Image (cartoon, rainbow, N blue to C red; front, side):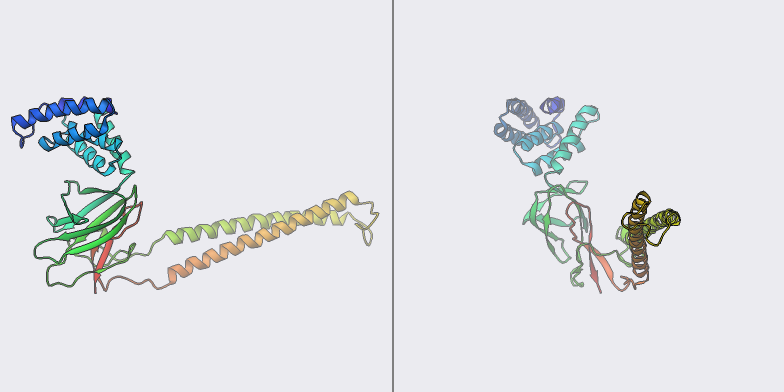
Amino acid sequence: MAFAFSAFSAFSAPAQAQSNAGDGERANLLFKKGRTALNEGKYADALRIYNEAWQLKQSPDIAANLALTESQLGKHRDAAEHYAFALAHLLPSSTDEQKNSLAEGLENEKKEVGTLHVTLEPADSSLSLDDAPVTLPPNGDLFVDPGPHRYSVSHEGYENNQQTAQISKGSSQVLWIKLVPSGGVAPVAAPPGAGSSSSAPDSAPPALHGESKRSLVPVFIGGGFAVAGAAVGVVFLLSANSKQTDADGIKANLTGTNPCGTGTPFSSQCSDLHDKNLTIDRARTLEVVGFAVAGAAAVGTVLYLAWPHRSASAATWSPTFAWAPGATSAGLSARF
């Protein structure tokens, strides 16, 4: 990885527009010095040098090597941010190997932090994380250390929105907050995992438009159990009937009032008859179980479909937080 990132030294030459020639030259010298420290395993020194270079010039080569250094020091959130910057600002001349190395590094760092896909309305609202102002990147992805965090969103002419959330390592979640104009009705937070709404503002994403729909997952599961249970019942019903026919054939060949009593000359046939009867009993039991499961699943599915499903048509929804660790989710708040 260090060798792959050292190839980004080709980007050190051109200084960015906001940097003067002196800053650009100083940043290039620091980049080379930091790369030497990084290759020698002097990560603390490399971090200090690369941070100084980054203050002078924000370029993909400095970002890539800074990310690699931060990863070695366990600064995963900072590493993810710099990997993302390097990927977003690569020059057209970058090789596939360079792009793949950066993408792999970013994916590895995402496993150690939480990723928030942030959407704010109004879009130019101010976002603070744990009381520190945050500048969102163009793609809206914000990397957060695992653990509890406090968010605050504000905009002139709107009510402030403050939230708290527990962020899990490796999770990817949606943070969508729509502020309420000052003097309006404050939103009532919906619980995490709240259902979709029937009425949403025109500016809401299409996923939140339309009537609330009942999930079909329980129907598929219940139907699957009903079919599987019925199949098991039929299989063992046929098996029991077949074994019963065999047992009746054996009985027909036995004579006497107690053909399977002590000293019977039909010991072999009686043993076979005994085994057949045991097999029949087991088959009948499994037959009953299979049909019982099928019936219960069918009844449960019908009740689920017939049970009154409350629609959200009486409420107007707007987005806020909902957290589902390890999965992307969006929360809703409502005005009634």
